[in-house]
Image (cartoon, rainbow over the protein chains, first blue to last red):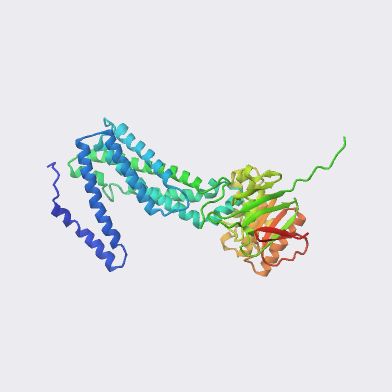
Length: 260
Length: 230
């Protein structure tokens, strides 16, 4: 039996019981998450339905421009989500972060779809958009964690950074540990995912392929490529963004521009 | 060949310095001038918030002026690589900062910076000798720096700066958070550094300080500029 079972609207609504459980937990234990859970649920429905209709249209009328446009919308949306989480007002981090995300994620998705999987044409939306989406989603979280940690530590350890500067450190030497901790913090979830995959959990993409009737041995190959791609793109984009942002935290005289 | 006396270049010269914090319209300094010669002990006094610490931070480029210039050995500090400048001008902050680790690690970690790589690292015996001179004879080099008292940390911070052999030492309120006994030790160290090692010192403070062995040049910082008695 290879056909995937269709899900009716009624069945979809039944899944809301999980949200009710989450809302009840938040209400009973005063977690203050009811509003976020409601907004998150509405956004999950609306964004995925929108993406579903967009993909249906793109798959019927494939075009490189449409594929790239969807990719661009996903990166812009990721940037907005990062901006919501990283509440930094003093250091301009948005444009360099956005450009790094755009270039590195595009290069990664292109490398995976065009070279490793060998799809022709490289922009084939059935492959390029899911690959791009996974890279963006995963690295977005890593970047948000790394940026948040970096700005927090720069403020909390301002006096320590200035002490090192006062003793002859350049801006890199003065902020080396903060830089490393921030990039590591962003990378840990991707590395943990590699440790647990296949043992603790079956990733969404592989589960989807198996549900759709793909041979599990083919599905795992795709999943391995995706896991490696996610770790690589997360590391590269995090390091590039943090290098740029770190420089921006210091002035021309290597003076710290981040104030408490 | 006839020898003539060459005009002496001051170690530090400040010309028409103005400064305000970003986003603030009011100036902390306006057209401030100052000249400090090598070997001088210069004391800046002033009320809290008058800009004493900011003056020191401007000298070592931890802050940037809005106008004017700071010359070190005759050259504009803006033209000197920041790390190189700060290996010659050491700034010790009001609240001493230590890294996690032993006293020895705290004293030696600045030698890991590229700009200090060619400097001679003191050996353990030399460190013990210096600890004694800084009234820290009871402190072992293996002792955790974090567990020292504030007074001990302050003396260790000054010693760490001196180990880099700077030409100019900037001390920012070095005794403000110390008990009278610890403050007396720091005063004594400052005087010894100036008197015995001919170190040039600029110290800012708002409390009383009556030096015993040296006669510092004292100026008062108020109304956005320095007022020095003749």
